[in-house]
Length: 100
Image (cartoon, rainbow, N blue to C red; front, side, top):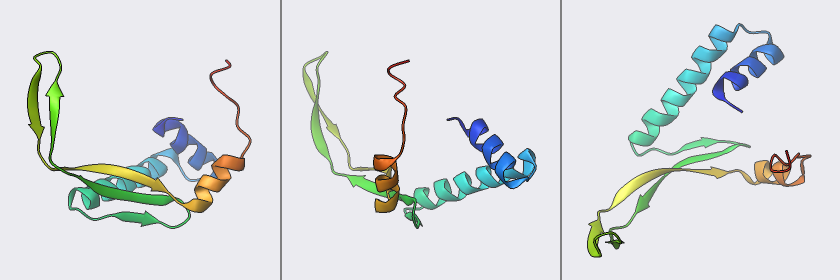
């Protein structure tokens, strides 16, 4: 499902104009991004958590040149779904796209 499809679905279910829904969705994403860039986690009860994870410094290999490279400590965005969300997905009716 794309962002445009999500906006259309919210608009049809709520009766709110697509333009207003789009502004709201964009504002939500902007708040999440800004918070995470600042190192702050975002918790949405019943849905999940947008978490900033710290990756430690490590040594890796450049296989094409067969040399060691050092990857410095860095932070990555991550999403951890809520238990209720995971359970709904696990027990929900799903059609497999691989069979199409």
